[in-house]
Length: 168
Image (tube, rainbow, N blue to C red; front, side, top):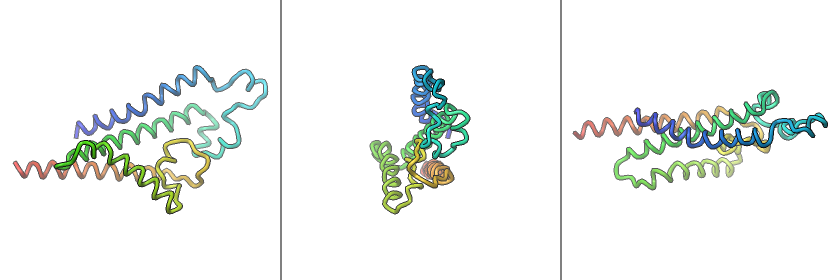
């Protein structure tokens, strides 16, 4: 279980850190207010299409904090996927390529099925990036998906641990 926690945080950092560094570089290169925006009086982040996004109150008050929220959600998803991959490795006679590829295939299948059945608001890819094209996004679906992956991963680890102890 301790290695599972380490795998979760390493997966979190692998996703979070590059996005955070990118945010810092964008902050330096393209600040929130440029001289032309100050003169004209309308900042870039206050355009109409950006007011239709989820968490628009945070976006209006502090766009950088809004970006950090999405960076955190992406990192959290990366950590959960890393933990799920780690738990799959506990299954007997499983190929190591399956351990790496299976979560990605499940992600694409879930996104495809959500699109086919006309429920794009249940597609996880829309929860990982800022989007204005999908209406009725509900982050409960995102949290349920993460909880299911964590619970399945924990069950796999616990059951394989009990089965291996009985075999000894």
